[in-house]
Image 1: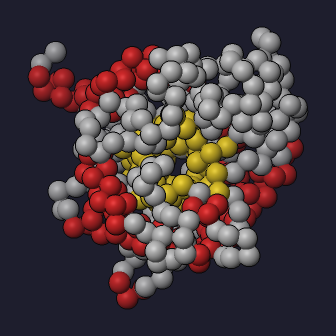
Image 2 (image 1 turned 180 degrees about the vertical axis):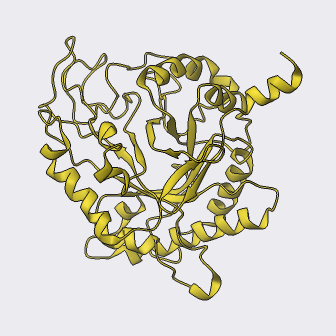
Length: 341
């Protein structure tokens, strides 16, 4: 293989573009439905058993190289990752995923650097702006960077009795700053910047991030996609869309909003003891939502989603390893639980 052929092979996965409320292949023009999984391979014990490690560098190749074949077996086309360190190089990881035809959504915030619980405007630390710009600079180099999420479930920080205006203006200002940074960097690919929200005050939050707070300053404070972490299919006997009223209501909510940007489920997969026991493992979820994304009545509202999550994290689990007993925080996909790395 010539050097040119190698280079073409390395970057074979075309970037995705947003047109209206859907993602499209930038080369073929084909509409792409996101079928992904949230991925943070925190092991079940040992020194790596915490939430602030960037597992997506060459140092942890032994972890993510082991998992990529499982991604292929799952049939996914995207993963969502957390806790990246922008000072590190992620080319080995991103290129390996590129070769596997997998896109990546990258979280801009971290456990230690994110929108705060305090009331606006003090909830936006300057360190977050610096961190966000550095992550965008690092991951904009890769064709398979799908999008950046500016914040995760900041609406969970709102005190009882207060509305989204408690801290949502901080997240919106962060989105505006990140979009302005990309726009200013003319040599940088324009990768979508949005957010992920918990499924509370559904309509109010969704409308807020899709409206312009300062129309005279352009549209930079509008999110370019909206992610919602929603667990509305909790009956393990359900197999069809018609049997899932909670999911139907979720779809109709966004239909009624006449939403103009892509909406995706950035977490889904309710835990319930009604799911079957398989090979001695209780509560094995079926994730039928991933099938329903392709239905005509769904695909014109949702552009896909990410199942939560790839592996059970011991720090959150309610039952002991190997997690054969059902646990209310045992969110691993199937039986792919990790041993110590």
